[in-house]
Image (cartoon, rainbow, N blue to C red):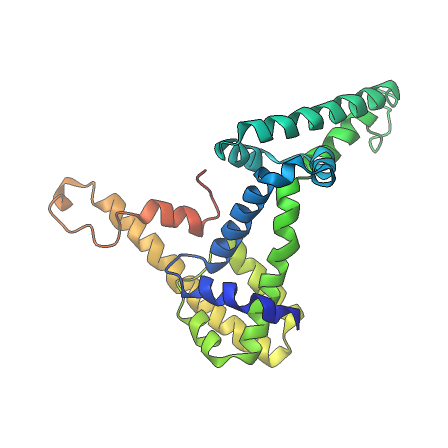
Length: 237
């Protein structure tokens, strides 16, 4: 069963002290994808052809730039820009649909269609999305097969809002009704308890700025903001 190949990284993520094991899994996949993109692979014609076609989203361009392999990024950007310039020119030569109040709303200029298609693709995102669903499958495989993993999930520090939703939705596809009901009961408990825990830390962080609390202990609030950012699906690059 393919899910068994991913049991080690999934168990490792749930063993970590983090606010969302799925975020941890995603970030590791992301780091691997960035390393692959900026490694020797960028010199290979097959990979360059794919990066030329897909390009990169804004988030991952920023991460590629931070990687410091500026020559590799320049080469990829150069060939990608050459391809975009050629294809945009071809799209522009196709003309435009009718304009004005009576123009069909569904018709878009070829240039706009091309740009929308381009902006919806990313080489790094594609590499991440190839494996991340397998991690989700593995979570439910372990939930069904491994009692120790069920206890591990129940005892973790919860999940971000987005991944709470992913688990909530995917569970109904992967589990039978009884197992799904049991999973949701555990998921809700661990999510809300830990979401409220972090929010309570944020509240105390705020209260510490009240002069009446200046000598009070910070408790667990010193890093409350970055942990709240994880819980609420924001990000810090």
